[in-house]
Amino acid sequence: MAEWITMTVEEGAGGRLDKYLADQLPDYTRSFIQKQIEQEGIKINQKVVSSKYKVKVGDEIEMYIPDPVEVDIIGEDIPIDIVYEDADVMVINKPQDMVVHPAPGHYSGTLVNALLYHCKDQLSGINGEIRPGIVHRIDKDTSGLLMIAKNDKAHLGLSNMLKTHDITRKYHAIVYGCFSEDEGTVDLPIARSPQDRKKMAIVQGGREAKTDYRVIERFKNHTHVELTLHTGRTHQIRVHMKAIGHPLLGDPVYGPSKSLFGLDKQMLHAKVLGFKHPITGKELYFESELPAYFITVIDRLRKL
Image (cartoon, rainbow, N blue to C red):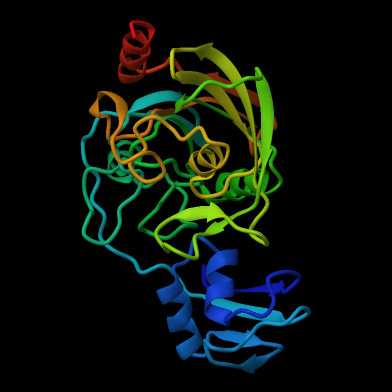
């Protein structure tokens, strides 16, 4: 639904309005924000300003979020691995290489196309026709568990749990280098990279981001780790692991230009998902097996 969102500037003052909002709201592109400013959909202290306006501590920013543009997404008979399903929610085990939801120029072959075929009209509509049922997402090249809302009440409940960090999410990854310690925490703020708007980065004044890591197995020059998310920032695990000198093996964006074994997809699997059912209140907990591609790489690393 279209809405106005409001925020107060507490940190990061002195920069341009469009850049500040792009850093604070990574789900929206800078071009989208600039368009909203041009169309008077963004106000500072209830006044219309330009993109060049320099934000100040204490400024109250209002931004209009329009309804998503509806497109005709067609259900497709694509096999999906359903881990759990009832009248309100589903848990899907997404394979590597599958896009979660359609985007301009890519309206078929996605998880949403598969869900529309499987569920017919029984999906939440809060995210608009382009993302029915999708509460959160994982990258195309990341495999693993994903929760789906089948009605708006369930969607709101799950979304609120994400905001309050009341959902258990644990990932398995293979990263470069060997850890000296068996476990630890990365607590570094994340925002869109000032140097490359297509990337996220550690940015002072960015959004809080916290990841726990635990070593599962050490190899010659790599480590298999379990990563627990306390927050859910875009590319959080990939950015945090790079920040501490352990980028994900195969990561084409945040890793080395040439990857071991010629891998071009990050070794990351959403293995554990736990949450309270948004309608019944029942505690739900799911754990998926490591996929074949992940096990194959582990076997190869053990032989190095």
